[in-house]
Image 1: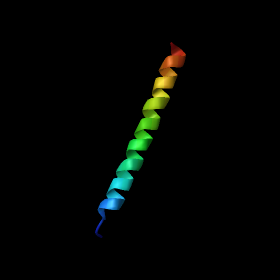
Image 2: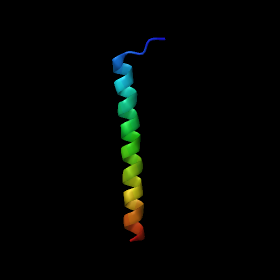
Image 3: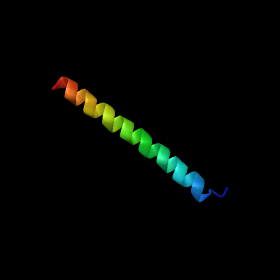
Image 4: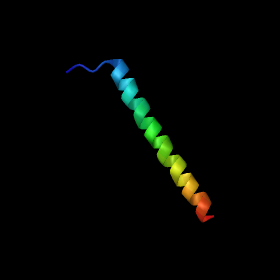
Length: 34
């Protein structure tokens, strides 16, 4: 199947969003630990 550039960018955007959430969560945990 042919994947459009729109679908590709959307999936990449979702992946980046999830990655940002994970990084933010880890940062919060490290701050709480001190």
